[in-house]
Length: 495
Image (tube, rainbow, N blue to C red):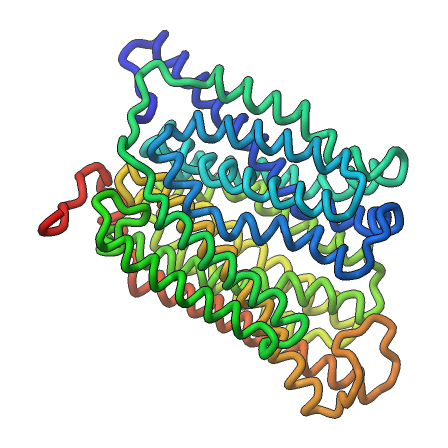
């Protein structure tokens, strides 16, 4: 139940509670987001200190992402039953404990284990932070999600440079230890931000078989996509089989249990179904674009630092505009923003397909980045808010977990599929045994093949974004978005 008061003094207290809750969710989510990126900067130093090797470096990064992707949905279900605020605070506390273990890890295997624990806790933090905002802000959740996006973007932009300074001047271990006081602050803010009214949640047993099957299914699928894209999908066929079996079992269980973790009746809600389909497509475009765009800039001759800084303007645009677009979507309906935003993103990617040299970057790349950032700012808050608000309030955690799972899978799937396309185009255009988009590639034929491969990659990414816009234009309903999603789902016959 969101905060809404009757007198001026009560309204002022409730507005303060909203702000404290927003600050807590921003700080907690920022911890989870930053740890996914800052560790990359520290990997060379960690590798040297713990003698990991390349495979060990990869798993320090991947173990965290795999745990996140596998547990978003179960984490949302736990929050719906146990209380989103309580689950959020417990997740933050667990994240702090896992961070302490990571900072103190004497070996690579212990560090990887601690990173798995960080990912498990991070899933509970990020999923329940959005559900808690929905619960606290109610009808104004679009604006709240926009503010959450803007402020977490500030942390995401500033985190990697700060992490580099910490690694260089102190120790890589402190990129984990610094999480402890920040986590304590997030817990205090969340506790002080409780609304005056008693918060209500669903009660009942957690669907443990469904939770286990979902974790196995999404975890195996993510593992197969990540490792298959790097080492060949034929070596990881078993991961896709395991994922298919687990997800099929999950479907059977969810249709038979009295209190399913993911009620499939939710997908009868038009906006929820189409918002998640659009999320899959748009975040696939986003993931594919950023991954290959960053590599391509270094292929063109930009330094790693310059390639990293190229992402900053887009983040700044999102910081300035995301909350505004979220508020406008609350007031006028999300359909226009969810349709036009991906189309503008697609235009930006198409402009980048004309970049074949450093000179072209200034003519086509800079406008392309501007268009991409504008489109992303228009879509990121409304799409999240629509996916959450389309479900009844008591299912906010499940809706949040579902949406974040779909977004992360879209990212990983696009990186894998576009990577395959890049390899095919590169070798078909004379790449031979060379490495596509390799930094320092000077052979004219190899460079030409790399440019061709990148252009096709941008066309694929643009196609995904345009498809996302089409889904919104055809499927999203402003009328449904403005309707309060408070009525209970009708029970299935025989349940």
